[in-house]
Length: 122
Image (tube, rainbow, N blue to C red; front, side, top):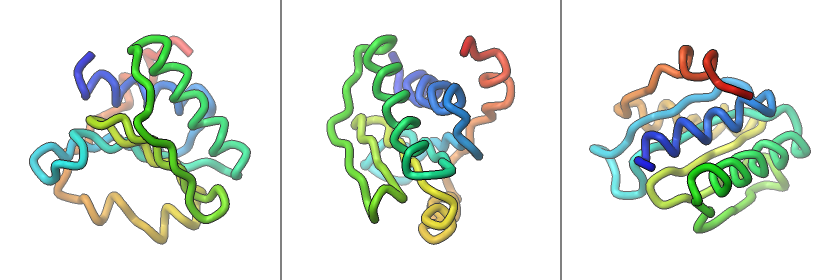
């Protein structure tokens, strides 16, 4: 699978667990850290963990990808899944507003997920 396909699959997994405000940004031209960032908000630390578990399960099952790292920050308010070419960030509302990754990486190219998530077989 391509990095873009992996990022979209991660977004679908987040959507399947009712993740909020899901964004996928292509950052290939901006950094060597990853090709895509996937950003999502969860309502609680329990939901944040469920969202991350869903991403891990779906990417392992459908793309045969396991995260290189899974790191949690600030008591479950932000979890990062690093797949090398794709980095998934799942925040609570406060942490997402504080870190404001969309603003920090605003030169990234956002993917339109509307049609992708509507057609998702969840």
